[in-house]
Length: 109
Image 1: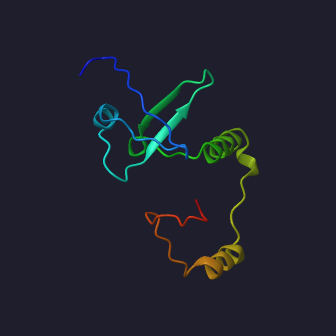
Image 2: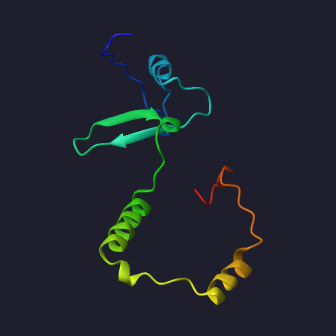
Image 3: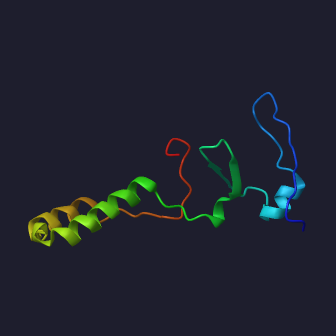
């Protein structure tokens, strides 16, 4: 495959388009695959297969980095979880079943 290809597609009145065959082949896309759009400050948009992208939550990542930094710099602030609190959490959430691979409903998206 050449190192540089350019292709176009047209938007419909509903802002939909068909992904050109050369792009589908390059990204190894199949029906129902998800596409990830990386929008850069320059206005450039990079398309990739969503499955090939690590789906890290940027806000959660920043929070976890903050916690790691704070724990490393101030270990004296750490406190054990009290048994009564742990018991209450278990009582509140212990029987909840969660399927982390289940699709989100439209209202949860």
